[in-house]
Image 1 (cartoon, rainbow, N blue to C red):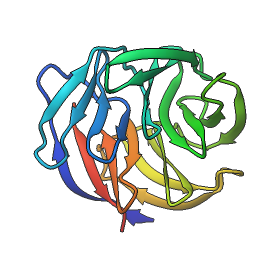
Image 2 (image 1 turned 60 degrees about the vertical axis):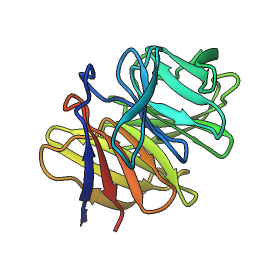
Image 3 (image 1 turned 60 degrees about the horizontal axis):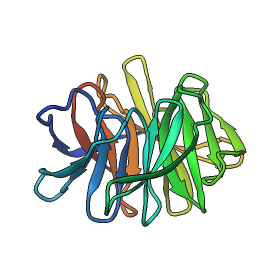
Image 4 (image 1 turned 120 degrees about the vertical axis):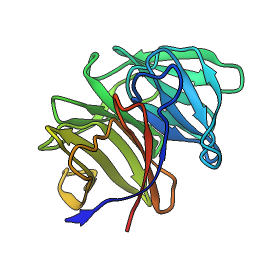
Length: 207
């Protein structure tokens, strides 16, 4: 198993008690903090702006819109206007964790059920279910492959898994006590990881 290389930490941020979902729009790292979505400039480490919206768990970006888990719903948000455009049921009915966009669908982690669902973004219909053997706290895609974060006890990992079978292909272990509450790839060689109640966002290099 590889050991994670944490190359940068952001935060804690004023008024942010915990970081949940994390996504990346190519410019900003967006992170959920309970009652708002925050746009973090990864170069300066400063929060550029926030959207006042329920933001309890995973966050995703489809190239135009943000998606945010708000208790038992997934809300679709226009980041240009801050408007909530609509919502679909979250498959975990409030037990949902990570969120990602890939292949025209949303991918949703179900924390304690140790599952990842592929979901139709228009209807909320579950198209596929993948089983993990550990709690799922974040999901992302990189180079056409599914990754998920796990945090159980004091142990956290990043895992590359087969999107059809759930078979683990690669593991990256975080240092003991460093927990992950959200996960997003930058599309290259870095992962942005939510730090839960530390109020931090960490950058992990895939190496």
